[in-house]
Image 1: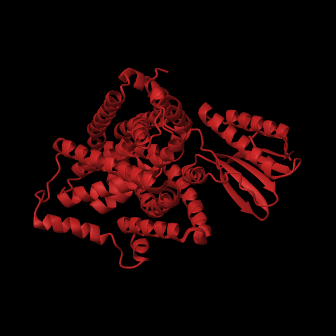
Image 2 (image 1 turned 30 degrees about the vertical axis):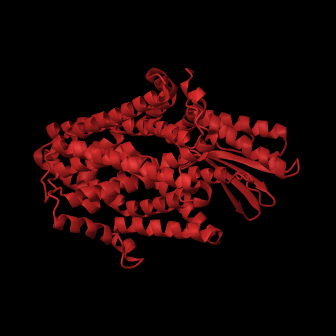
Image 3 (image 1 turned 90 degrees about the vertical axis):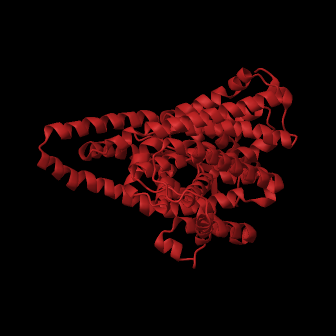
Length: 539
């Protein structure tokens, strides 16, 4: 038993359940979080979560009952675990608060709230933590510089035969291996992600007709925004046009695409790796789980745990992505395709302009409708926006978003409790625009014909995958893997959009969250949950 941190930062201690030990445990947790350099907002949220868990256990068990606190890192991933032996008592459930329970289940899927398990007479609460990361933009810059340096060095310092040997025996096989990993991982991870999201968002008994309408409006807004963006952006790309006119054949092709997403049997999508059919299977199974209810709860729990493992794998891929951008630069210098990576400025600029323009117009709409000065509205949203811009992390900025919605924008806590979790999963207008524009750029680079059917397929996949995939590092590149496989874009193009996806994190994370806050103002007003005095007050 260890009563303090050892050299590796591990901590393991047993306490007697009482008010004093609750404070001691919370202090220990805060010291551990400071030790691993966790952001202040995340530190506060985790400390409060641990205190809440222990206080609810104190209400359910006699004072003096032993519980165990374990903290540390495994495979460089920090963890905090609380264990208490006795009858099953889930401290994350509040009797009579079904919306809170449901929202917690949804947030746990993206690592924002603790997870409870009861195993062999032991109540276990695991607090999810993510490794502190360097700012992805800084990482991308360093990898870009490193790739350029190595590429120029290889080009100038080695003979042609030696360059060919290094490229063919080391660099190209590494690139091919990464692409194979993406193809192998993307199908199961996206399937589990869609299935878990459906199980969470589709809880009709909690969200009712308001929740269903909210999800529908979120998806509709993302779709319309993407359609308008595609229409405006198509003039900036030189892609071969494959039957762009709307004819009977094109309409038939669109219908054939949507009918083809239904598999002939349950196993074929998994065996053949047909991503669109896997999405349909996940949607059907998810809704079936909802109808079956508690009868399949064990199976749903298993799916959620498998999804958690899948998100960890996606995070690993996200960590590897900047390194493969450097590899791409080296290969690009050798085979004269570096212009494809340099040309990423065009889709990046288009995404930035469209996203900021949409955010500005929505802020102007809110300002005029509710008579809030535009400057005041911007000041209210500034803190959460800048935090998200700096950290690229939904986990870190969640508390700031919640505070902004409730205390600065006047959105009722009843709506925030489930509206914010739904939005973090489903409301991804900038993500859909970014994925479609970067996909269009990849089509331009590899001269892929773009037809009406192609555009409809791209739109459908972008909206569906953005809404189903959680805002977790690494999910973006898996989304492109799915889209490229269906749209006929070579897998080699994946390494091109890697840089664009990481670079666009500067826009995607903060603008998505800011637009969600504005959308929730409209939702709150429609439900009579908007506090106009708070929204209009300069604070």
